[in-house]
Structures are given as C-alpha cells and as structure tokens.
Length: 297
Image 1 (cartoon, rainbow, N blue to C red):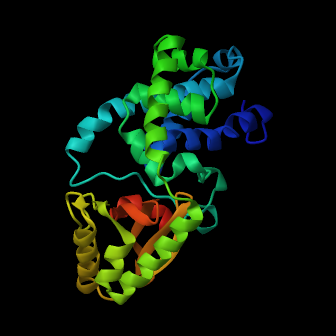
Image 2: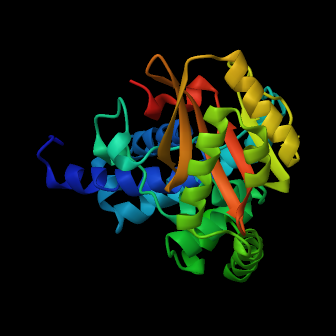
Image 3: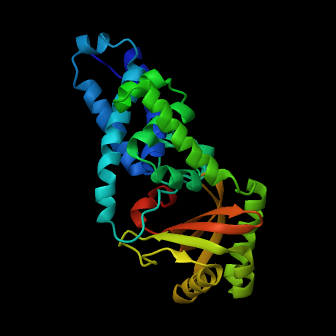
C-alpha cells in the first residue's frame, strides 16, 4: 500500500513542478495547467501497482500524458475563445516572492524568457501541434523522437513544426528592447499615468502601439484592441478618471517589468509591456478576476 513516506510516491510527486511549468507554457493559463496536472495524476493512480511498475520512466510517462491532455485542450481552445467575452490574454504571473494565496511552492511557475507575455502571445498564434512540438523540444529539451510520440507525427514533421514556431518567435524578438530599458519605460508610463499627462504618455508609446485588454465579461474593459499612441493614452487617462483611488505599483509580470493597479489594497488590474527601440509597442491588460487569483489574497 502506498503511504506518504513511500519513496515511489515522492518520486512521482516531485514531477509536479515540471508538469505545472510545462502545462502553463502550453496553455497560457495557470488554472488550466493545474487541472491538467491533476488529471495526469488521476490517470497514474487509476493504474494498478503492477501497471505502474512496468513503466520504466514515470516522469516521462507523466510528461507524455500531460502533453497529450494539453494538446487536446489546445484543439478545443479556439472554439472556447469564440465564446469568450472580448479579447483573451494569457494569465499573468507575479514574481515568485509575491504569490498570494498559494501555499505550495511547487505550484509556482519558474519565470524565464519562455513565460514573458510577448512569448506566450506568439505561442497563442501557433497551431496546437506547433506549440507542443516547440515547447517540448526548444524549452524542455525533449528529443524529436519523444515529441513525435506525443504529437502523433513523425520526428521529421515535428522538426518542421518546431522550425516554423522558431521563426515566429525570432521575428517577435527581433526588435524587443532590453529589460533595463523596458523597466525605465514602464516607470515613466506609471508616472505619466498618475499625472494624467497625455503628452508624456503619447511620447512613451510607439505611434502604432496596441493595447489588448482582457475582462472576460467580468470586469469592464475595452472589448477590442486599442490601436495608436494617442488613443491608448486617452483610454488609460479615462480609466484613471472613471476609477478613482487606484494605486499603481511597479511589479514583475511574467518575469518582465509591469504594472499592477490596486483598489483598497486588492489587485484589480495587471499590465504587461513590450517595447521596441525606446518606445512601448504593446500593452496587455488583464482585469478578469479569475485570472488574477495568484495576485490576490
């Protein structure tokens, strides 16, 4: 009988963090990632001890099952997104030292370049097979032979999928500003927003900048992307006028400089930024409270 002190159980559960990290990158949602990992363990424990013993590498088995569940979810995600109210933005994550209400450090995603918001948004533009092949091979270093078993294609086809995905990532990164410069731009944006200085905001934004906001039908926000520096500047100042008492804080969002808006000490908005040259070119705003649970008590 398996007990909490069983070394076999410890070995299986030690894979949990890796699975959470994988599923979040594949799905862009921590809540969905946790559901995937839970389902993966349900399938493991649905097997008899004899069946479990036949598996040479439990970690590889868990990864394969979790990846296939994610692949199925990605296939149905487009249908679900069609019913989503407004724009869909990946779930933002706080710095690992600032998680609220998450007692188990195993559930915290490792923040690196592969979880910044710009990266996740590019992943969203890929086909499910492209996304899984790229993340498994380029991020988690799985050989194409193993990726092929998961995706259900040949190793050569998976190599092509990853190459196509890599091109998209490379194109998105081509003009990205260094983190230090982005931090300064985000700080200046915060100050201009607090001062309601429309001229300063316009000067910080690329003329063709875009803001995408996600309220999920549960928080008021723009239902379509806002394009152009002046339009974005006017919109964020209108928010400040409509919602008095907001406190704007500089925070790490998915490993990059970002902003958090709090009202009465509760986080109500998280904003991630991307910059090109010395201007902000993209802002992703999440107001859907279901996506802000790691930020709130």
